[in-house]
Amino acid sequence: MQIQAMISLSLGTLLPALTAMYAQKDWERLRASYLRGCRYILWLTMLVSCPVFVYAPELIRLFVGDLYQGAAPVMRMRLLLLPLMQTIGLLSPLTNATAQLREFCLATFVSQVIRLGVAIYLVKVLKMGAFGAALSMLLVVGFAIALVFWPLGLRMAHVTFGQFAREVLARGLLPMAVAVGGGFLVRGMVLPSSWLGLAAQGLFCCLLYIITLGLFCLDRNERGLGLRFWKWLGVTPALGPTP
View 1: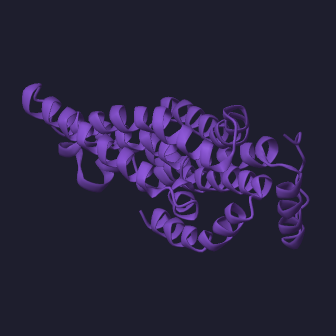
View 2: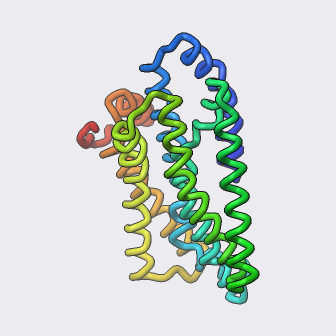
């Protein structure tokens, strides 16, 4: 939540720049800014979220005890939606910059009304409890993002779906896939039973994320910035292929 709050505050500073690009019809810079912004938001958020997703049962057991283990599937269900939500992280300031708030607000309102109806059905009729509420959010909001909000953002930013898939989905989700896969593999071999073990495996998951990000997901400019940072620390990392 703290990361999300910092991201929200940071996005407000982009509004004047996005507005100027749109007013000047500088589609190239607007397109690059939208793709880069969504990708960076996704990278930053999922770095912290991946170990939480993998080790949700252990985190809950160590924090509040085995009595509340039923909260782990709910937590994971909510976290499954997070990467989808971050792929449209720059959509809200973009709608303000392009003065197209009506479509965005209407889509948000309709999706929330549908989600509420589905949640009531799953919780009250099917008696699925908190898991049903989380499932309703994943299904309805997930479909809304893919079918409504993705096309809306791509149209405003003058981005094709192919560009979005390459620059945001592929490069943005690859570190998450490797970190989550590696985390579940290690968890299957050694189940953490203490805060120290949980921290060690969580750090390993984050390390996998950072290595994959650095080797396979950074473009030439991003890699140059990373190299300057490592040289400042006195380290010369190995280089992977540039996307």
